[in-house]
Amino acid sequence: MKALVYEGPRNVVVKDMPDARIEQPTDVLVKITTTNICGSDLHMYEGRTNMETGRILGHENLGVVVEVGPAVVHVKVGDRVCLPFNIGCGFCKNCEKGLTGFCLTANPGMAGAAYGFAGMGPYSGGQAEYLRVPFGDFNCLLLPPDAQEKENDYVMLSDIFPTGYHAAVLAGVEAGDSVVIYGAGPVGLMATIAADLKGASKVMVVDSHPDRLRLAEKLGAIPVDDSDGGAVDRVLELTGGEGADRGCECVGYQCTCQGHEVPNLTMNNLVKSVRATGGIGVVGVFVAEDPGSPDELMKKGQLAFDFGTFWMKGQHMATGQANVKAYNRKLRDLIAADKVKPSRIISHELPLEQAPEGYRNFDERKEGWTKVVLKTAA
Ligand code: NAD
Ligand code: ZN
Image (tube, rainbow, N blue to C red; front, side):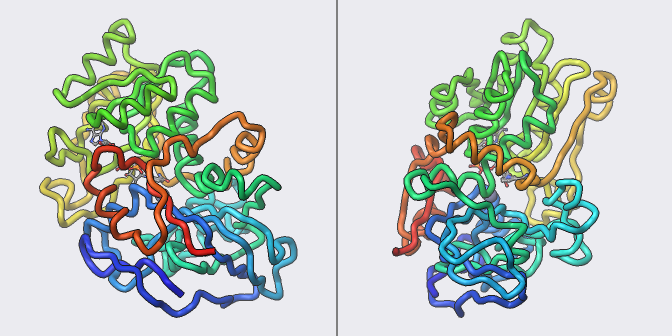
């Protein structure tokens, strides 16, 4: 099968790889029809993780079931399914509680498994013609009859839509809250939609890319341009000097200030721009070590975090990978009911063969390259 393979920093190629196949009785084999490039892929693409060369990337996957293992009872050949990026077993202590981002079975010795992801188990990604889905009955989200017509909406259920929603949940967004979101990438834009769904009275989105800020504005948010580093002051102005009720981190450890990486920037800006006793949800990725970081602390996975101010303000924070399965069913139903349209943020639809071009442009955050979806030949 054709697949997108990581061959080293900023070097990905589409080439022939051994076909994905059923390996366990509980597996499902999916023919991928749409698969996205994610901001998380970029940390790997740039060589800023311990991703092994030769592996297939891609964790935002949707397709058609072509084969099921003998122990699969619910999912059937021909079903159109969207796959959560995290792989859960369904029966461990965390999965039972809906915390499928921290499955204790799928990646022994670590909490959390995913397709084509550094440090999250041996599973191949879905930027390929076929994908092996472990624990298929648990992990396949069945799609409604309009699956093909709304494929570009439903594929967002694999990761960024639930992840944006998770950011709002972790921050504790409730009806009437003001919310500041750092990052107007795909995840920040989905957090914008999520804050809206939860009834936020005011959503402010911080970034320095004008095209992305325009998209945030189209989604109903107040764009806050941080190209002069003045975002915190503007958020304080917009909230009567108090700060926002809730804050979402949708950037991660490679956040920048005027083009330079400053890994503690968004976290400390959140402490400053969220009010006393407010909540902060962090879904942007931070890593346990980053030898390639220009920052001495970050090399060891540490941040110079304004803990004193955070404590004095009595704020609370929650973090981590999104438990996609905790939300994807309900968010699917909102798409089916035409209440939300996450495909609005897609900027480019490319054939899988052109994935390297998609990676290059998305990685450069080139004007207009917000979200790339890849299509495999029918
Ligand atoms: P992205 O890299 O396209 O978006 C990040 C945005 O943040 C960019 O638009 C960038 O300009 C902006 N940014 C950079 N520095 C900033 C700063 N100091 N202040 C405000 N904005 C700043 O990627 P994405 O797909 O939107 O992903 C965002 C993060 O979410 C990544 O770290 C990704 O790995 C992570 N992620 C986490 C989960 C999860 O489950 N927790 C899932 C998907 C993605
Ligand atoms: Zn992703």
